Amino acid sequence: MKHFESISNSRKIKKQDISLIGILIYLIPVIGFFPSLWTLYRREGSREQLRASRLSITLALTWIIGYILLGTGASTSEFFALRLEILNSFVTSGYFIVSVWLIIRKIKGKSPRLPGFSRFAEKVLDKYLS
Image 1: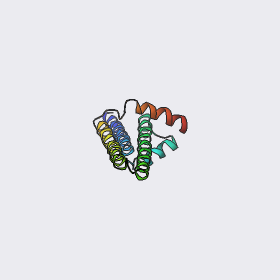
Image 2: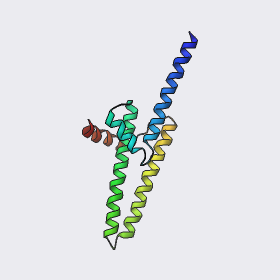
Image 3: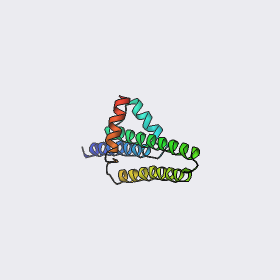
C-alpha cells in the first residue's frame, strides 16, 4: 500500500514541477509572451497558470506600447529626444526587473502577482479573451 502512495506522491510532485516550469516560462520577459498567449488561446492550464499568462501578456503589451510611444516621441522631438530615450530605457529596465522579480517570487513559492496590475490584467484579458 505504501508503494502505491509513493507512486501517487511522485506523480503529484511531477505535475507541480511541470506547472512551476510552465509559470516560470510565462514570466520570462518578451519570450514568455508567446506561450502565455497560446495558453490563454487554448484555455488550458491551471488557474495559477492562466493568471500568470494574463499577467505576462499585460506586462509585455504595456512595455511594448510604452517602448513604441517613447521611441516615436524621441525620434520626432528635437528638444525632448534624450529625455524620452532615457525614459524609454527606464521602462525597458523596469519591465525586465519586474519580470525577474516575479520569477524569483514564484521560485520561493509565493504568488507571482502585482498589486493592482494583476487585477487589471484579469479584468481586461478576461473581458476580451473569454
